[in-house]
Image (cartoon, rainbow, N blue to C red; front, side, top):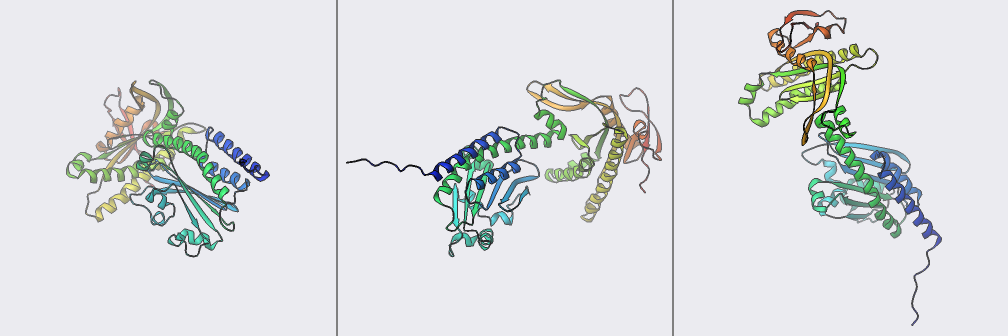
Length: 415
């Protein structure tokens, strides 16, 4: 009996295979480079469409390891500007996510799901998004879930990516289109995983170490003893009366109060271009770099603006606390300027980044004098010389550990 032979590939098959190999090679090359996740996904979709796969819309969703962002997503259209979204971290799922067809993959444990939108009685009716896409002329929605790592651990960490592809082709996607999308999904996942891992490392380092120190660590400056000398305005503030507050408040309530206090103080620093280096109990150590033309005066202006902003924020916080029958909180803040050393210190197994130098010690000692002079904000003589203001001279301060007294000033009232 004569054997049968597979049919020879057509010219269209050969061309399609070459296009898919080209997209695969490009994707892996991108994964090995410096990836911007959104730009990468948009470019990937463009290549998929150019290869003849009839996609008209694509959507990527990836969880994020970030204190404020829970997930990021990107939406591509064949004839519109791409859209990028950051979704805030929440304790409960948003209503939009609850109604999303992508959620069914994570809840039901499915690797993929197809919705034929040209079927009048199809399950697409359960999802408002799919009803909108059908109204826009789309005929099929194809969603895939890819885990990063083993499924059990990835589910626990919510680590993976969700991608949907939508077409307006009559009859939906052809079988060879679906096979191509499944194949390309794995290549896309490699790039997305690499981009997410790099962004996660940056998010964690900058959240826990600060923006510039975190980037220094990521760039490889991790050796014990490595450091950087810089000239900066130094900000040191401390909450007053925190010990009795901690003793009489429940732990969770005190942590909530601390976070509100830090939003007022450290938040003002960040919003005015400063860098928060350390949270020391209820104290905030921050700097405003004095580099570039007129660096000292520019840094001083930013620091003083941040200090006044922190005062306003604390006043607003205290207003809300009084309305709830809670006692107000107070803080003291000192501003100084000088040379500091940002250095890696510790033991080989546990290295930390800290800031050291006489100017840092003086700023901390100055903050303690806010109680002595009954002022919320005081500045050193060196700082006062940076800005031509009508400073209020408070007197001489004997600072512990400093070999001579220092003149201390308070800023003039705001107009």
